[in-house]
Amino acid sequence: MGFDGSKWHNISVRCTDSRIDAYVDGRRACTIIDNQRSAGNCCIGGNMDASQYDNISVMPVAEWTVINETDPSVIWVGQWWYYYYPGSLFYNYDCTYSNVTGAAVTFPFYGKTGRVIGTKRSDCGYMDVFVDNIFKTTIDCYNTAENNKQVLYQTDELALDNHTIRTAVKGQKNPSSTNYTIIMEAFSSTTSPTCPAPGTNLALSATASASSVWSSSYTAAKANDANYITRWNSYTNSCWLELDFGKTVTFASTRLTEYETNRITGYRIQYYDGTWKDAYSGTTVGDSKVDTFPAVTGTKARLYVDTATNTPSIYEFEVYAARGDVDFNGDGAIDFGDVAIFCNYWLEQECNSCCGCDGVDLLHDNKIDFQDYAIFAE
Image (cartoon, rainbow, N blue to C red):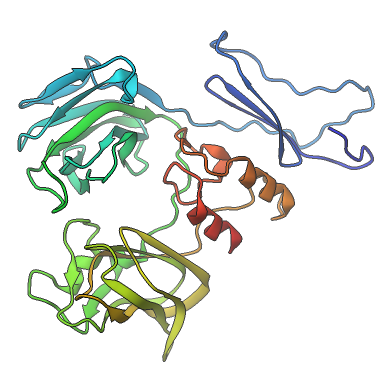
């Protein structure tokens, strides 16, 4: 690569499993896949004696240890069925599935973080998740198209110790699903620190209220309980859903998850600093809508629905501070070097190593798309 030899440059080498990526000033110079060696030494050198090196650092890249769902360490309870077909899109060409309520599987691991890998498709239902025997959440495994090798659940970062993840067939489903099935393909864990979280969901510590509720089963509190099955439902089309933080907070993005896609046709994200002000305005919401905007400061946040085709209903109204560190090459500046790294991973669909894709996966959903671009461009 040609560059000005009279000034300092940034060189980095990233080694993950069998893949080696080399960068010069944030631009990927080459990628090598080497499956012949299980270990080795990493060195940086030049072909001129006058080359100088400074500020050399070695940082661990967390790697996921993946095991197939058939591994002897995995514990199955209840009725499950095994499927294997060479050439299928399942991890290792197989899966184990059940639609029997209460059927459960436990993945024991030693590490800081664990993952459940499986399939989402049109006949999948709800899956309860327990970490160290404590209920964490319910996952909706329904999807219109079949998506294999999906990270269905990832734990928060835990203490480095022995842990378990247990998933169970809930026996309930999305109204659009044809069955209650959950499909397991693999499990994974890491002993290294995970990627920085996209930020704390500020809504979880807020008090929710609404201008209208359908009934006592659909109160405002259902929209900030970290449960993607319960939901707030308004009684009127024009309405608002408010989060009172009880203190001054700064936030720069929100995520809305809507029941029955696109009931809402016009809305605003607002903040209160003595008076209500608009931070963002949009049209439709859908299954998951992330909105980013210049950071605002206030004691409350509000979803204000201006227009809707039916009474609005929201599973979760999430509020976050600024998302992600966009200094990808770590040179202390946000510039074209960071843009180059972002472009290198554009539309990547498998950022499934810990902190994979050089941190470009700002939304931490294992892919690079316009939602990551929106956060980066901010």
